[in-house]
Length: 139
Image (cartoon, rainbow, N blue to C red; front, side, top):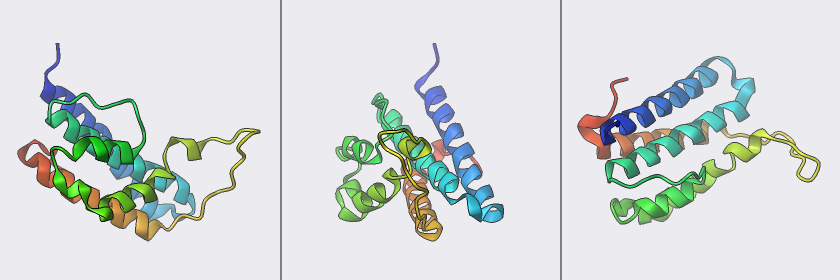
């Protein structure tokens, strides 16, 4: 049976892959803005899930960053601040649903403000790193 810390580090490793993917796209393929935003959303989602794991909570099978923030509020009261909610809302559009098109809900490519996505990504990284302390993976 794996330990809580194996689960935590596994989640953080997956977040690191999404974060690095965002950085690569941001640095070299700015025409892939939707893909960059998707990986930013995924990294934040996994950092928030890591914070839940750290608090001995089982993360839900959800890609909704706002739901994850709500679950984290009893442990981290800063997530009550409207700024975090607004940032979560700004990334939620780039979650899994944006990657698919169907007959009922055809989507045109989103206009992605990559600078704003990056700012939000970095803000969540800072707080996750601060809260996880010594359990944060080296970069």
